[in-house]
Length: 224
Image (cartoon, rainbow, N blue to C red; front, side, top):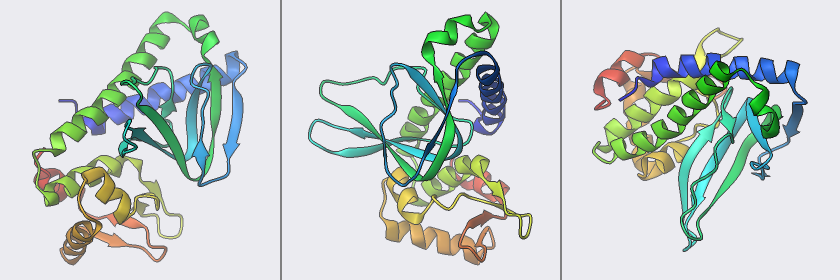
């Protein structure tokens, strides 16, 4: 079981190097998407590195059921590896707000130094596997532990609020998103979050952004 907190720091470093190298040595192309909207990346030709914003990935079953599959935010890469399709299943990407990034031609990956390319693939394969593993892990957790576990993971995606220098969870992480990821009702998520707020584990700033005050509490009680 990988430690995602430590792993994310390594992946951030590797993907940052990838973005810098691609910008300097290939015909990488900046892109901007005004959202929220449906995102249709050309994964056969490009890898898409997200610099700002978030993209949510859904898995659509043959019966039309939409399942949360993954999300990509700052320094995450969409692409590099093909999606695994089962019969008539397919994947769909939607954006939360505006997206800025660079798309990098897959045809140029062979020109990258071997050790650099190998680490890039290794870290990003690990990331994909982590989300599959975390989904399986949550099956054995109760509702409270699921929410704690998800908050522990997304704590790494927090950003600094300039007005008070606190670290907040991105605004797109709503109670509805937490409910979808944990596969529980929004009402139950709201109850857990309310209890955390009463215990001063979390708070909301004046913009309604979630701030985790005691990440150690969540780590210690998430069933990890």
